[in-house]
View 1 (spheres, rainbow over the protein chains, first blue to last red):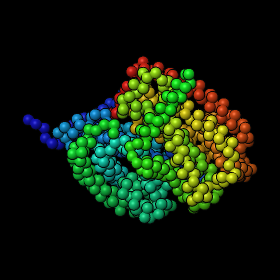
View 2: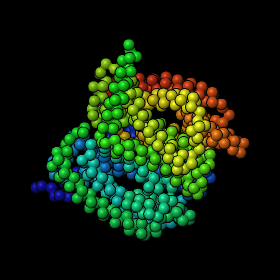
View 3: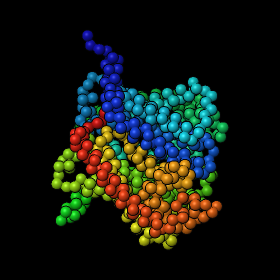
View 4: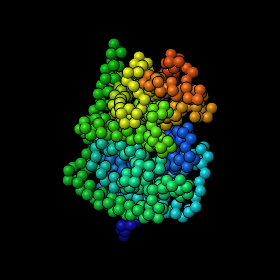
Length: 273
Length: 292
């Protein structure tokens, strides 16, 4: 008896998550590089606000933004560009001939990296909070869970869509990931309220799920006393839910199309181009 | 003879680095990629500053912060570049072992690859500073620049950053491929402790003590003194306090300390590199693959 489609793909998710979980245990230097060291950058941004005698919430925004960078970096480097990396080291064709959805492989990557990413984000939040004595005023924990979960689904959906484009990339993949780091920190307002960019720029940046997710979480954690919020929470949740569906659907079609394009142009297994 | 051999290694490694960095696309797109990232990183700070001050960019502190952030690109890019060279050669192109057994000195190869990073980063730094001066009114006056101090500081600073990169390259032999964590992390240590975007006096006392032994702290200060002497005098005369934490030291002392710390860090880095190299060979990590 053969396994059904669902069982096969659940196995694929587990199978792709496995090396990441095991790898994290066998090679623990990531704890230092991905948890301890990134705190310094967050601290630098917090200290500059302190030096300028900025209002307390802004330091809180930096800590929260610093925590969310973990997820953005994970999506960018460990998910979107991972298909490119797998192609370069010769694993991609194995994924292609396996009777599974490419999205299962990507979901496995996301789940496998979730432990270290969550630890990175949580430690930044915890240590930043203690170091800079930040006070939170969380009034709606249910809404926070909904916003956070929806943001992650939309973000990883976006990562899956990016992964399809990276299938065809050569060395520009590395440069593109590098390019999408700081500019996204800027337009998504990781270290300052996004509405400082102006309404239209903030609206454009809202296509990146972390923009609205971060804005909503700041409103929830700091009760938006300073009026820094960009849109009302319900609307942000609704947009994030829409983005989740949009990116997941686009990812599915985009992966199929790029795979077809890669096969017909002979670039799917082309290495070191 | 040996020096000529090392220089040839350095030159060829730099050429290889340039080809790997730049020949994947046309020059325009490459220039765009090289400039957008540093400008964005700088604009993050500009917006943070504007959120607090309401947009007054004509203060001495704004210029201090802006120039420090622009120069910091050298630290971040070179350190990241070195770690990436190790991972890229070892795990991506899988050529590290061939480079290793070639009759060349590996540190010369690494320094050659770093040299091209410095050249590319220089373009980003130049554009960022130009943008700051023209658009944001950053206080650099070409006529007032102390060129001898600038040249000496640049030479010592770049040597020091390359030497730090060598130590980090050694450490990278022993670690797995950690996405961009190393870039964000190691450079972040200098970002917070070396007076890059705020004076070290903003840090707690114990952290200031660490800052004062880091060569990057003195490099940042000497470069600012060279590029904008008037702004630095203004910073150090604010409220009659030593705002930067180094205001009581003259240029000669700053340069002497930079040279001394660069020499000390050179010895330490070489030691770290040799130790890590030895361990990596013993543990079979020269052709390690960790792309899980």
